Image (cartoon, rainbow over the protein chains, first blue to last red):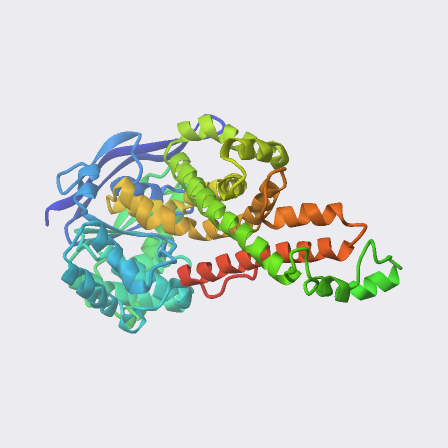
Length: 265
Length: 244
C-alpha cells in the first residue's frame, strides 16, 4: 500500500452545549493513502464535516491525534499542504473569478508572472477560461463552485479537503461537476478528502468510502470502491456501481437499525 | 404640492410663503447692494467647506476607531461607551464650547461637523469589519494568512458597503453640524448665520428663511449625492446598488 498521508488516531470531539456537552465524534481512526480519493458519508449531524475540519486544523480535536505528511495538522496548514472547498463557494464578492483564484498566490507572495499566468491556467482546467473577468454574482452556483475548486488548487496542495462542495447544486450540475472533479484530480495527483451525503456521488468519485454513524459519529464501515477508471457517465450504469451503492446504503441503514450490514440491502 | 397644500389648508403667507416669493427672495438686493442669490452662494460655500473638512476629519476618526475596536475587544469595551455617550449630549450644548475653544473661524465648525460625522462611521464600520462570513475566515485560516492579510484582503473590502452606508448618513449630518456650529454668537459667515438672521426678521420677510432652508437642504442633498457617486466608483462588484 502507498504511504499514508493522513493518519487519524482515536480522535474524539465534544462541543459545549446548553446542557453539558455534545459528543460529535467518538474514537475515529482512519488512514488515507497518498493519491487516494476518500469520501466520508453519513447522516446529517454525524460529525463528518467536523472530522474534515479537524484534519485541516480549522478546529482542534478534544482527544486523539492527527498526522498529515508526518506532521501535526497545524504545521501542515502553515506549510499550505491543504486546499479547502466549502459547501458554499466563499468567493470574495469584490474580486473577479481570476482575482479570487489569485488570492492564495498573493498571500504567499508568489512572483508576479505566476500570479498572472496561473489563475488563467486553473480556470481553464475547470472550464471557465472565458469567465475570468466575471464577478461572482455574474456566475451560476456551479460555476462559482468551480472557481472555488480552481482557487483551492492554486498552491498545488498535497491534500484537497472538500466539505459537501456540490451539496447545494441541482443533480444534473452535480453529476457534471463530479466527472469534472475526477478529471481535475487525475491531473493534479492530490489526495482528496470529500464529505458528502450523496451515496451515488461518494461511490462514483472515490477509491474508498468511509461510512459514519449518527451522532456521536463513529466509522461504521470503510467500503473499497473497485470501479474501473477512468470513470464517466457510463460508470453510473454498471451493475457493480449499483452493487456498491447498495452496500454503502446498507452500511448507512444497518447502523441506524443497530444491525450488522450483511443482512441489509 | 406646496401650493396645493397651502391652498387646501388655507395657510397664510407668513406661515408658508408662496413658491414664487421664496424664489423671488434670491433676486432681492441685500443691504450691501448684492443679490441674495450671491449672498446665499457665498455663505453656502463657506458652510460647504466646513462640512467637507468636518466630514473628512470625522470620517477618518470614525474609521480609525472602528479599526481599533475591531482589533481589540478590550479597547471596544473600554471606549465604546464613551463614544456612545458623546452622541447623547446635545450638539447645541457642545457647539458653543468648541467655538470658545477654537474661535469663531471655520475650524471650530469643522470640528463640530466631525463630532457628528464620526459616530455613524465607527458603528457601521465596526459592524462591517465583524460581519465576515465564518467560512470566509476559515478560508483565510486554511491559507495560513496573517492578521494583516485577513484585514486588508477580507475584512476591509467586505466592510466597504457598510462604510458607505454610514458615509451617506454622515454626509447630511456633517452639514447640520456645520450649520449648528455657526449658530453661536460671533460667527460671521455660513448658512447658520443666514438662518439665524432670517429667523430674527421672519415676521418682516418670511421668504428669506425659507430660501435659506432651501439652500441648506440642497447642500445636504449635494453631499449625499457626491458620496453616492464615489461609492459607485469604488464598489463596482455589485450588480446595482439600491437607491438609498
